[in-house]
Length: 276
Image (cartoon, rainbow, N blue to C red):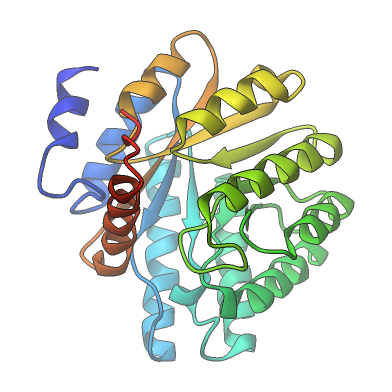
């Protein structure tokens, strides 16, 4: 691990960067090692349309930075940041505005998935955008019973999928149940999607995916979070596995950081060491 990456991992801002400039620098360092990035301006659950408009502008600023610096990166959009919980039509407008801007700048976009109450409207908005001809990656959560149906529907519509275990509360809550669902859904994705990505910090799942999915090295992109699994990420990138790092930045970090700390506490309770 180079000096910059080691020093960043041990700062007080373990899970996020202070601002866009620092995220750009990290992304550039990753790109030099063959690692792509997912950049994300922090913010979620806005309380009014003015805040949603500000969030949409922050996503466009991120897209502009990726384009200007010629980075190998995408931008991740949190639906609650652009008003999915406030007013559905405004959410559709902001999402399509962001996708349109990203298309013009040739920057990939991913739509993140949040808490269960927002899943239906998020997926409806995603498929509506796909019908308008926009391209993006859609995150789906292994702990939801509806996910196999959404995997198939995304395949039918030609929408790339990113499978994650889920960081909120879902239909499945026990670790063994979620792990089993993740494996089942990964097999389904591998049958329906020629290329896909996964977001997991679980060493057993990473090894299982490498060993069990046909042509995994060329088909799967493995996602890692800033602050955990950096050595594993670098170790996979060196022999040619496709990996990316999730790079959140900004001051509105409370909810995001809390979910990471809850994750570490759950690992400690189960006596499981976090990924290095």
